[in-house]
Length: 94
Image (spheres, rainbow, N blue to C red):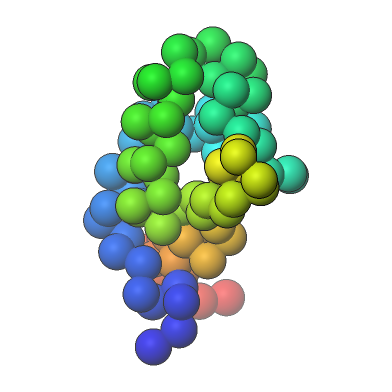
């Protein structure tokens, strides 16, 4: 089983249902960002942004890494690939 199949699509879709989480994914899609930058970019408190980032991480849509004393969050493309694979099944073959 590949990384994309290991993602629980139901959990990922529930995480994506929240517009704040989708906004956060747009912030972290290009470069890993600390929670303070994410919070400021989407207009949330750091505590609220941290909550959403943990939810995205648990859903397999974000990863976290340590950079000295900071934690950097990045988009997990494997999680999005699992969601895309699920949604692709709804279109007929060409």
